[in-house]
Length: 512
Image 1 (cartoon, helix red, strand yellow):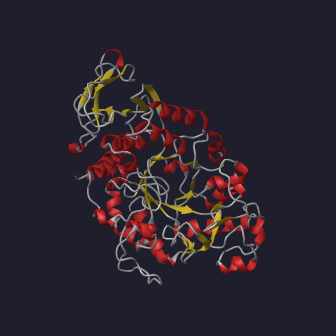
Image 2: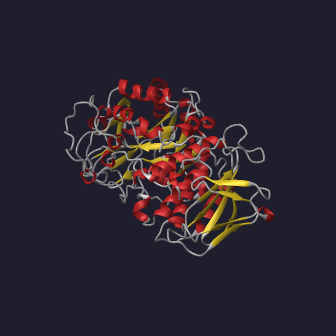
Image 3: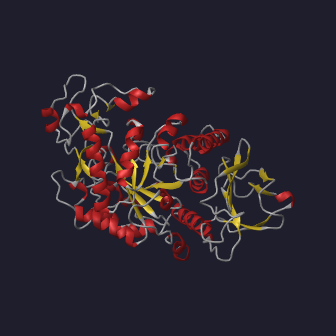
């Protein structure tokens, strides 16, 4: 399928490549990459002391050879889906030895932020990746680890000293720059902020982010890092494990969009961190989506409705939230859901609701690893096929871009400016209005069933012509601004309708 006519619209979202702000990120879509697993070693791969595995076995938890230059080699694949930004795993120096959990191929065991990880390339390679993205009008987001540093010493029997810290090649070697050991209790907010993550096999020493030297050094470093490599955004790992007061000056020093990982469904905790950075990952709605669309599963649409309502009523800004159905810490959706229409529905949901949609690499290829490490598969065995999901992502990205052009609005609101509103729902479906787009999502699954879902106040006048972006069928709004979705032929497909326009050219090979 050729998407060139559509992708001109998507790639038109070109903003400043310096100090990219929240407003410049809203409207984009992000492709998440684990650098080691996205593309095979390029010709300029660095020499490694630990050889690469001949076959990338995810259970071995070792390096498979992906680099920043490997990503450059495959940018066409990402951009052809209409993705307008990438988020790459941490780029800083990591613990480089064997542990009880094997090796730090993922990049999250950062020892010293001041240096790059030579496993993934050189400073020139990272700069070239940044430049290659900006040349395409795309943004670069980098994962940042501030909360902790790794240690292979048993925290219950070892004492932190300057010597042990130096032996682990850590940036900060004064014990006062770390919190004393306590095993984290995730149900206690104070413990979550001050105690150590990890376990006795691999401890993650909690950095004292109230120590003035630590605070100052981090702010100096992040400003220099962002400016040197022209970084457009930061994804903050384990954001809720750092007292929230650390983040405003840190993100101000960075000068770019900051989105934090606040794992869990607790809205008061989400609010504390959403108020101290640009945005957070929308975990509350993720869990609601899982309840609603995974089959077999709860099939609980009301859980998603409640999550969306709670987030809309609690968080100050829903438009910049990270919306996702997979990431490196979660089971692949295809592992928890056997029904292909339900997978399609969950994908569509992440694009038609509020927030910045995030696609985790391999999601578009139907990968189905259940959890770490099996959800961190190498992508290259897929041959980067032009799957149906790849095509559907392209359609969703292109329609979102079209809806934000001048004139593509509903009652004066573009897609980005409008807030997603639930028009109606029952135990099997819900209808979401977001500006010029109306989506009807169901958990009925693939089998055709003699059932329907009616919308009685669509917001469009009687006789208005609508088009379904997947089937390309035209629909006429009936009396009372109503229309009906029938599930007797194609089963529980997602239905996404917008005003018909001759400028909205859709590739109908992606029929639902």
